[in-house]
Image 1 (cartoon, helix red, strand yellow):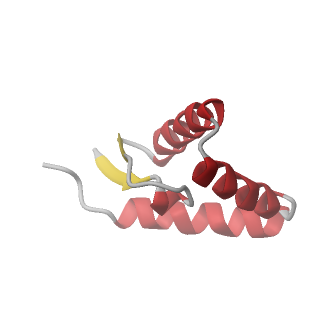
Image 2 (image 1 turned 90 degrees about the horizontal axis):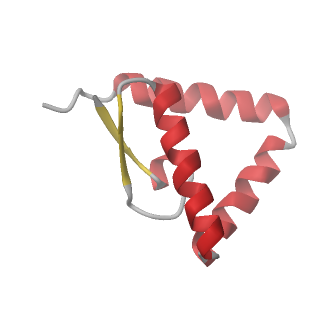
Length: 79
């Protein structure tokens, strides 16, 4: 199990996510983002807008995704 924060995943807060795989981590982050979107959280909405801009360029998005996957892989397992 590894831990990453919302901010580490290009979000807006220090909410921690715990997952076994990067795919699980991405899903937890996405779920959190949707919750913050529904609440109208200004900081998260701003972060989402920036992420949408990144998603407009598939090459940049893939690079970002690969970098985050490497970061996840390099993290120590929680004890």
